[in-house]
Length: 199
Image 1 (tube, rainbow, N blue to C red):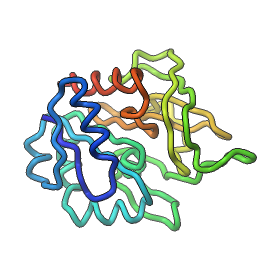
Image 2 (cartoon, rainbow, N blue to C red):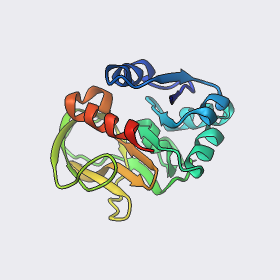
Image 3 (cartoon, rainbow, N blue to C red):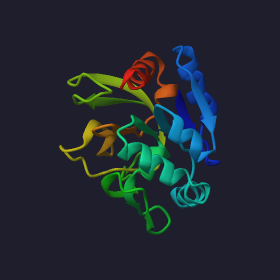
Image 4 (tube, helix red, strand yellow):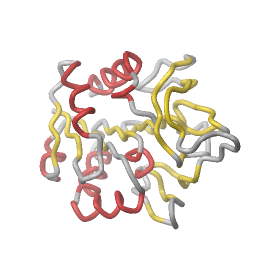
């Protein structure tokens, strides 16, 4: 069973429907015990980093997610969920994240372009559990902040919108996407299928 963590700031039902379409059981839950019992954990998110970090901490789901990651369970962050996995964010101040990835989330620098970055854009993938690597794929974004440090160590896909940024990241069993796979058509569904198949 995949646990989709509900801390009050997520596009939960659309993520669950994508897994249902793939025939994969997925439960929306706000209970840390359900996350502990799940085989896979998904951290979605929409909104401001500070509010999300506070709600995640108050719910106890932050510790449940960290324990799942430490136990080697496949863990996936989506959009704001990806940003929360980083060490910190500079969105409206300085706030600490979960620290699963190094670095700080910063405002997307895209002079002359609309912010938020909203709509379809191309990513260049690298080999990881989510992608074969060496592909250009088109996916759906909605964000104003990003992981602008594109590290060869943990970046799994790169997108450019004014600046290059990490569109997906991966460290072992922990992975995340800045884009919305559940809104990215067949490309996103293939990625979610690969995540669900991880042991």
